[in-house]
Image (cartoon, rainbow, N blue to C red; front, side, top):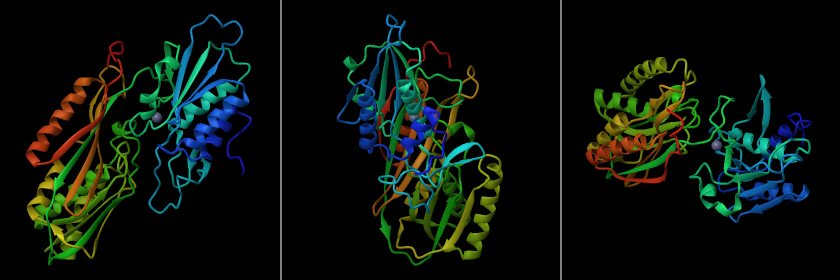
Length: 402
Ligand SMILES: [Zn+2]
């Protein structure tokens, strides 16, 4: 296999080796084994957990023996996302990486720089015989992107260090992470009743958006495909009424949805539908001209199998329009820091229900509490059966004014 990066630099080599081993969340077994073998080859003490976490210990370099131990941490799982027509199999295939204008990319898929970058740096330090450092406890966790499951499984007695540096920061390059925003997942279920319908069927497709990580990119005004789809459906509903048949958008809680499609029936003819969609799409396109110039919107005639009760359809569209999304608050102290956000992440519909997932992030407890309370009120108004889960409380921000 040809090397894409410069393997004379350990950091490049370790990153590229990682891209050759599948390591999506919950599929970290092989990479966890790679880490254990890495430690064995270098005679470094190591503990491998059943869940896949690995801790590698390295003694202090000469002269630093009496310094306190430092814990370094990164996660080995990546978010597996690909463009719709990409045939990549995340369970099996190595990533197809290449360099473009000085940036490393992966063809058709996410690259896994979050948190392959942190992993590669930690391995470089562990492999470096010349580096000067105190005793190191290098923690590699699994299933971070799906709820920090690896971190929760850590056993405190495995770590002596009281100083901790996470190599999983949110960008900027000059930032060292010592705390984290809290998060919560909100899942709402709407009951729907289907009936046969005689009106004409249509499909609305939203695509071409940048998406991105809902923690890192939420402050960049990127378009949310589900939200945009909801707005255009609302425009149609206002002008001539429609009834939903299905809606599918987004794929992961922590990704801003790039694609969404909805099927519906309406008494309006194709020309009228086309005109309304075109007009809504052009004003929305103008809003995202700089942040998301690739936005595409299309409406086509389609075979549609049955539709919802019209009132339920209208209520669902109202909710999509009104539900909070995007950056909610930002720091007045640290420039560019989003302190509270919501990501309308996934919509799925089935025979008798529609499900919506929203992920909440907040740098302080009160932000999360406020957003969760708003959603509780909305759930009551719209008759949504809602549950909140995976509540991760924010890290200790007391010494870091936000
Ligand atoms: Zn990460």
